[in-house]
Length: 201
Image 1 (cartoon, one colour):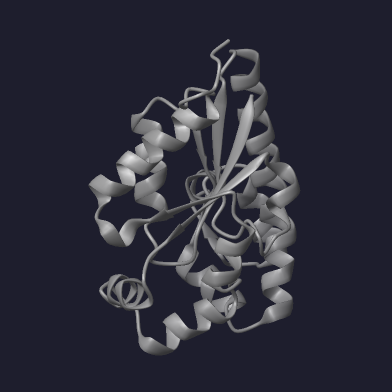
Image 2 (image 1 turned 180 degrees about the vertical axis):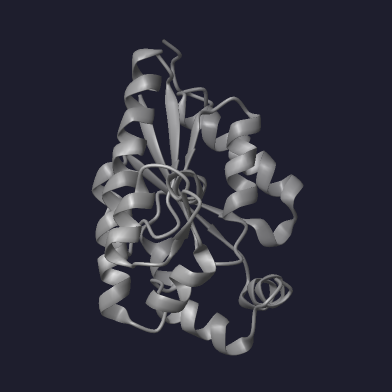
């Protein structure tokens, strides 16, 4: 089974691209969705122990938690030390299930793949990109987003150009999502060995 790492900076269209893989029948593990699930499950007692008062009725209160960690790098590292191993264990179980089921390809949707050293967990990397003006317009249209917050998020991410340089595949969502969908289909075919001139097993 080929494990494909899907990543991209904020506002590049990564989530929409992940849906395209899923629509094509490829198993996709979504790190963000996993965190949401963990915040009402396994992570709750661990987060409460580390950050008292940030959970309520068996669920992590993301607003209260953000208030404690976003402006405190040490606290953020403490939270990451709790959450990242849980997400990775969930992803490993996901891969094991689909490997056992005989899936030829599986996708790990990892927003901070390069930033967290996730490159060694996957066979190939696809980076989702778009022109800077498109990215900015998408991000600033989000509720509660500001220029300052956007700049702060970008500062914590590996630059788009560097991600593209390290990628095995690049999908540009700036040409429209139908073009991106066609690129996803072509990539799946290539990874399946179904490209012109390649013998099929």
